[in-house]
Length: 403
Image (tube, rainbow, N blue to C red):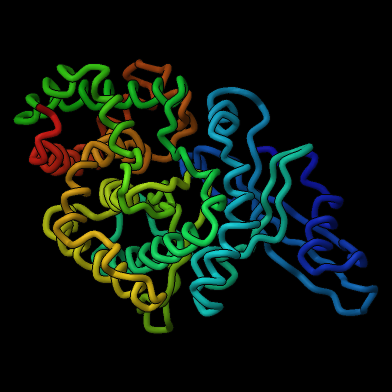
C-alpha cells in the first residue's frame, strides 16, 4: 500500500510538538511502511513509522516508533463506511475525552489502550499512537482464536472499561453522545454488507451435510434477519448500559508475555465502533469472532460467569451500589435476548476473521462479487469458517431466534 504524501515531516513535527508540549522539535528522519498485511484491517489504513528527532535543540537524538492510522481517501465502500459511521471522529473522541475520564475513575495503574500522540480530522483524518509492539505487545494469529486463559484476560479488561463507563455516564452523560451507533449502524452500506453476509452464509451452509436446515431458516427470515440483528443492539428503557468496545475481534486485542511465555497483560486497540448499550453486545461479538472452537464448545458459560463476577468486583471497588446492577439471572436473560447480535457477528465479521490473506479481501468484494473465485465465496466456504459455524448455528438456534 502506498504511503500518502501527507504523512510527512510536517505531520510528525506537529505530532511531537503536541505530545511533548514544546515548539522546539527537530525531525531528523522518518520512515513509514505498512503496519499490517492485506486482509488484517478493513476500515482504515495503518502505517508504522520510525521517527528520529531532537527536542529543544539538544544533542540527544531520540527515536520513536508510532502507528499512523488514516482514512482511505481513494473512494469506495471503505471510505464511505468510515464517513457515514464517523469512525475517526469517534476514535478521536475516545482518546481525547473518554479515556481520560475513564482513567480518572479507574486510577493511573489501569491501562486499557495505547497512548495517543495526535489526532486530526481536517485536512486529513489521522490518528498517531504509540507502537505497542515496542513494549512487547503483539496480535495473536486470527485464524486460531483465543484459549480460555486469553478469554479471561479479555473479559477482565472488558469489565474494567464497562464498569468505569457506568460511573462516567452518571457523572457526565455527554461523554457517550458520540456512541449511539456501533459497527452495525442502520444505513444502506451496512445493510448491504449484512445482507451479503447472510446470503453468503445461507449459500454455504445449504451445502454442509446436516446443516441445510439452518440455511432454510435464515432464508425464511429474509429481511427480518437484518431487523432482528439491528434491534438486538439497541438500548432498553431502564436497562443496564455500558460503553462497549464494539469491535472485539482478534486483531483488536494485543497481548504481552513474560520471560517464560506466561500471559502478562493486554491492550485494546481500534476504538471506531464503540457503542453505549448492553454489555451483552461485546460478549456476543467477542465469543462469536475471537474464541477457539474448544472454547465455543465448552466454555461460553464459564466466560460469562467470569465477566459477571469481574463486573461486580470492579463496580464494588468503585463504590457503585450493586443493587443497581442486574442480577446474574437478569444479566443472562439480557444476553439471551440479544443472541441475534452474536449471529449477525458470526454471519459477517467471523467470515473475515477466518478468511485467508487475499489481495481481494475487502467489504466491497463481500458485497458485490458473487463469483466462485471471489472473496465472498472463499470467506464463507473455507473450512475454518465452516467448523466454527457448525457449532455456532445450533448454539444460536437454541435461543429460538431462527424460528
